[in-house]
Image (tube, rainbow, N blue to C red; front, side, top):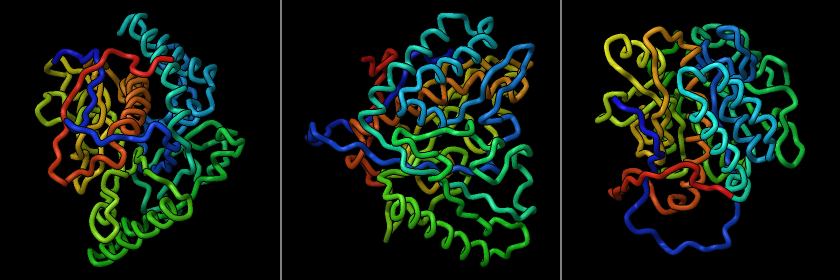
Length: 342
């Protein structure tokens, strides 16, 4: 299927009157080391096909955008651009670079990052998928972002990173233990993110956990739980790859037909990547000869950009105006990038 070269966003047909003087939203990110595939070497320099490129995950992209760290963002975009310039052409990466840099001002006006939660545990039977090189210590050099990463107030991001182990996922647990443990895990997640961190919204990145208790009464955080997925989640699109293997699925499909992938920023509901979309973009070609790490790295600029654009669009048109499951419909719009140039 042909690539999308325009960002798609989704909003209700009618919007309530919003105050022009709105405070920044406080974001907490939830992630999982065990669910970061081996090809997702976040926080590391990679050597692929004789080129060196940095794998920057969404927490680091968001932090650098909030800080206005244009040099670090340029280093990231240019490394990926050099590696893939023959595949996508220089114009593509020049445009992506401009978009990522230009949206930074909009991000800084609208958001504050208050912390990160990860659900890993030292128990060895919980790590069959975990990236082997990652440490359990957020302050170490083997973490998922560069050592010394600081938030705009000067604090180390690692100092605001909290472990809430999801030990209920142990293979030896009974169904009853998993059910009870899952409820306790979500309760702890709620207490830390919406209590201790006082976050307005939760952004899930690599957290393969269905947050079913948080989207129903009595807590009902629908509309405040968001996810960034590294593929298209629309079932009517032939290049839809939901679930925890979107990269492998895209490469498998590319063996018999032309495939493009991208990223979807969407609301979390009780399903797996089934929530209503907020923003999506599908510009990344998938080659039948791709290795997972090659494709993942090529698509990371799209994922980072869709996360940033999706957050701004969410702040402007969806926060406190839309909740999945209430029967309200969203209308799709398409936009030339960048949307939020300064």
